[in-house]
Image 1 (cartoon, rainbow, N blue to C red):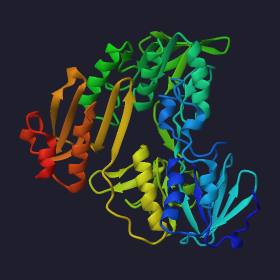
Image 2 (image 1 turned 90 degrees about the vertical axis):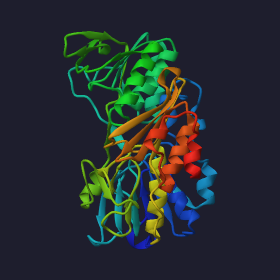
Image 3 (image 1 turned 90 degrees about the horizontal axis):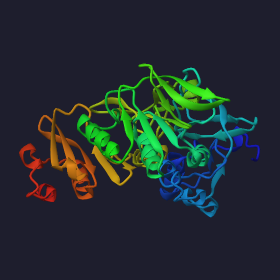
Image 4 (image 1 turned 180 degrees about the vertical axis):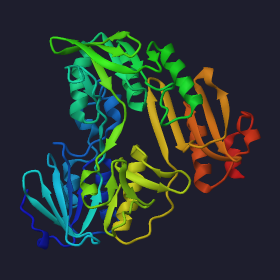
Length: 419
C-alpha cells in the first residue's frame, strides 16, 4: 500500500471492514455520484465475498471460493475503489474529537488519512472457554478459511456435534446430516433459534430436524470437550453425559468488533451506536452491518445480524456521509435455508401478544403471523414465499391483516394488500 499521509487525503472516505456492508457503502457512494477517493480495508486476504453460503452450498461442496465473490476485481478499478486486503487498522486518531477527519494507522505501521469514516467491521464468533476448548477438531465458522478447514474435516468424520441451535448451527447440522453424518445439536436454552424466532417456529424446527435424522438436545449445557492425542473425541455435558464427536462446530453467537469505535467514544461491547440512518453522534462517521447497534422506535437499541440489514443500513449510511436524508428505514427481513426448509421472516416478533398459524405445520409449508395490539408486526414462513412476500409488503406500506382472517386459507393474503 502507498504511504498516505492524513494531510494529503482530505475528501477520502475510509471504510473499515471489507464485508457485505463495507462494499455496499463504497458502491452506494459511487452510485450517489461521490467522486472522492474511497479506501476499503479488510483483515482477510480475500476480496469481499458472500458469507451465507459458507454454512450451506460451500460446506456441501456445491460452491467454490470464486462463486462467492461479491464483485470481480475489475469492478473496483472501474469505480476507483481501493481495496486493501489482509490488513487491519490498529488505531484511529481524530483531528478533532467532534469531527470526522483523522488518521488511521494500519497493522504494518502505514497511515491512511480520511475526512469521512465508515465502520463496517462485522464481528467474531463467541468462543468457549471450557476445558478442552483448544483441541483440534473444534471449529468456528465466520470466514471462508474457516469453512474450508471445516469442510475438509467434516468429510472424514462420522460423528459431528454442533454447539448452539441458532441459524448457523442448524444450517451446518442440516448440511452434515445430508452428508450422512451422525449429528447432534446441543442447545443450552429450552428452544432453537431463540434469539431470532418465536417459540411456535422453534418447536416446528426441532421436530423437522429430528425427522431428518438430526438429534436435538435442548437445555444441554456444555462443560468440557474430551480428547485424545490433542484432538476432540466428544463433548461433556453438565448432566454427566458425553456426546461422541470427531468434529465439533461451535455457533453460540457473534461478538461485534467495537474496539476501534470505542477508542473514539462511539461504542461499547454491545455495538457501535447509530441512528436508523447509520449515523453516529459525530457527523461524517457512520456504521453499518453486524457491528451497528441501532436505535429502534419500538424495541430500543438492537443489533441485527443479516445480509439484508447490512445492505440497507450501508445504503443509508452512504447517503448520510453525503449529507443526504436517507429514506424510510426498511422492514427487517431474514432467511435461513436448512435442508429443504426455507425459512423467510419479515418484521420483528419481539413483544408480540398473539400468533396466528396459516396452513398446516405438518405439511412443512405454512406461515405464522404475529400481532401486537391487533396490528401485524411480523411473519415467519416455511416454504411459503407468497405469504412472506405479501406480509412483508403489507408491513412496508403500513397496512394490516385482521387477526380473525389471517388463518383463513380461502382468503388470499394479497386481498388484504389490495385493500
